[in-house]
Image (tube, rainbow, N blue to C red; front, side, top):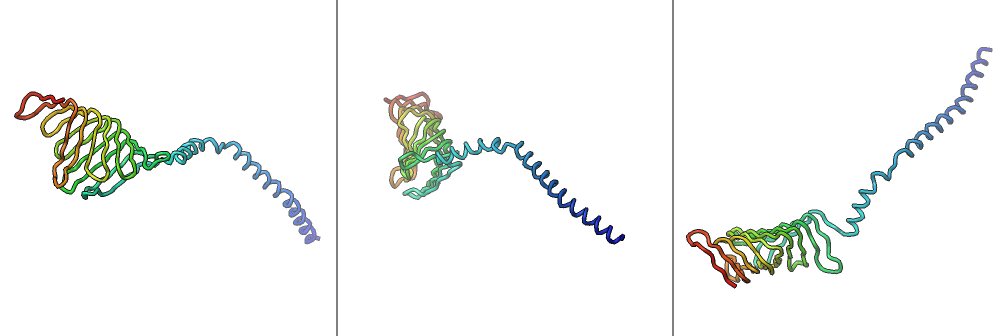
Length: 208
C-alpha cells in the first residue's frame, strides 16, 4: 500500500508540474516584453542616422590627404579637416587645408587656409585667411591664392600683405614661381606695391 501511495503522490506532483511550469515560463516571457517596451530604441538612433545620412548624401571625407610628385621632382602633400566632391565636376572642396611643397633643392613652401577647391590634379585654390610661408624668408597673407599641383607656381589675384627677405610689403597681386633651370624662388609683386625695407636700407618705396 505504501508503494502505491508513493506512486500516486509522484503522479500528482508531475501533473501539477506540467501545469505550473508553463505558467511560470509564460509569466517570465511577459516580463521580458514588458521591460523591452519601456526602453525606446529610437531615442539614441536619430543622431547617428542623421550624421550617416548626411555623409552618404554629401560623400564627405574626414581628414583626407593627398600626396604626389611634381614634374620637377618636388614632393607635394595636402591634408584637410574634411572634403566633399564637386557636383558634376572633377575635383572637390575642402576645409582647413594645410599644403606643403618640398623642393629638391631643400626649399619648403607651406600654405594654409580656411577652405579651398581642388580641381583634379591640376590646381588648388585656397580661400579665407590664406597664408604662405617659405623656408627662404617669405611670409605672405591673402584672401585667395591658386597653386599649381604639378609645379611650383602660386598666384594671388588680389591684395597681399606680409614680409620677405627685403622687409614688409603690400601689393595688389602676386606671382610666386621657380624659373626653369633655377633653384631660388622668384616672387613678382604688382599693383600698387609698397615696400618697407628693413636692415641697412631705410624708408619706403611705392610702385604703381
